[in-house]
Image (cartoon, rainbow, N blue to C red; front, side):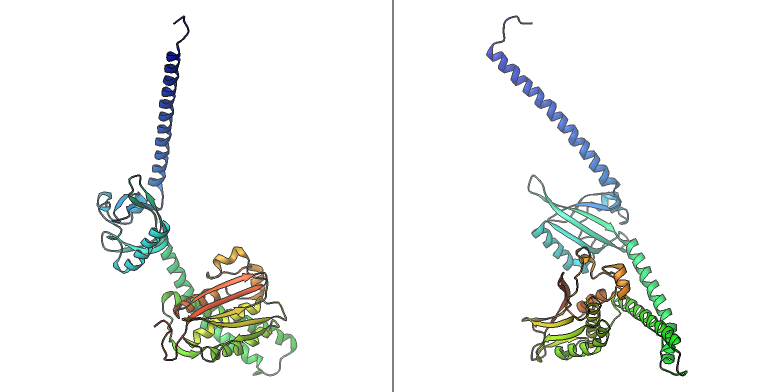
Length: 392
């Protein structure tokens, strides 16, 4: 109501007052928005069907957890927050646990990592974990983890494995008899056959062989995953093993008008392998390369020796493997192109079986691919002249 103009000091005061009121209003708006976001995140935390936990990095103690994590443990919330993840982790996972902690230190993240948790009653259940480190304003390090109870998944996998194993075993005996009978008839045991009948028997015999291969692959995979497949590791000449593999698989490659070549391998290289399983790995790699090689091309088997390992590579000159298929190349029943793979045959188990077998012989397997071809390779420890592994 002042009729005279405001003085400069009054104008300055009014501006400061306006700014102060505006700051209070904005701070209140931000606080309300923060509380709203916190409420939403807390609701997501509490309602998540997958376990979520907050642990102290140094001690491993649980600081916060949601109901999904608590549900299968048998503990109350008050009991659980007195524990650390060491208290509910079986002792045999200690080495793997320390490796994951080291990942947290160096990368800020860990997992995916599969282990077991111990319930209050002493029983165990499988979990899959992923997590990351967060830094508090006071410098304290915490671990956020997503912890999934995979009991149902494991149960389903076990049921599926048991079903496949049972069906495969039940099919093997009658199919072997059928395949044997067809082979005898084709061999002339009942006399000469007419051309149409011979063609029909040829189709039936080839399909019975394909079924036999499928059943054998299924049983091999089941044995590998169950740890029931025995490996007898002995010292062998690598060059001799590769020559045998080429000799055995060349007739199959001939069907695709493809030649197999051993590019280089010295006589002195020895590896400790199971001879039968090594031959099976090579058959899987060579048959795959043969199927996907252009007619008239060849497949190169090369050997590269390092100080402690030797690399065996099988290279074709086909169109390569599509990029979207790379991540699942060694998974069970994986095939790059359904229609093409069906025409070329195969169970989709060969590479998965090969990986398991290579790893059981202390090796690793991988591949490189481009539109100029694909190279599958696996590394095995070499044996020195005294008969010991090069790293011993």
